[in-house]
Image 1 (cartoon, rainbow, N blue to C red):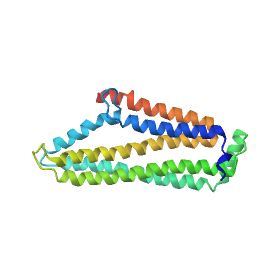
Image 2: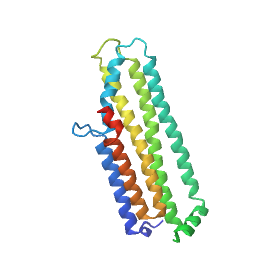
Image 3: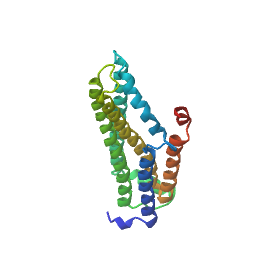
Image 4: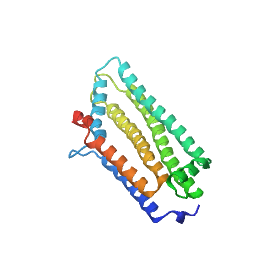
Length: 220
């Protein structure tokens, strides 16, 4: 496809989209005491989890929680893989394109249509990779947790386990944000303006849940 078939407003919408994604990742994951996000507030609880772990002789509860986290990563990874396949399948289905043309009375170039769908597929694929890596790091965390000594608060393995837990959660949360932004990106099929409006709505939703939600207030 000739890239310059895209309108200037489309290129502007893409730049806004990527800027918001990058800024959100940096701000939400920042360890700041001024206005921490819901995600970063969980850091201290993940460290405390490993500290309490050393006081328990029976660690079935810890193993169960970690198993649930791994299962969540696998569940979302499977869902993302199906979604990627669905979007790619749409690239070979002109019926939907023709239907939208009739609704919005706008001619949609086939190459541009496929390019926009491919863009959505890339976002979903990125989320898939995040979830896969998250599940794997949770597995590493489980092994390190098993090596933590009992009643030893200075055990270096405790700190390593907490950091691995945080790393896995970081990939998991980035994968979740890719789902949000994929929903915005699919609105690009309707045009650059709907794409930007959807990106703004998704951004507001993520920002509110990370910095102004009841969940954050409870953690504070």
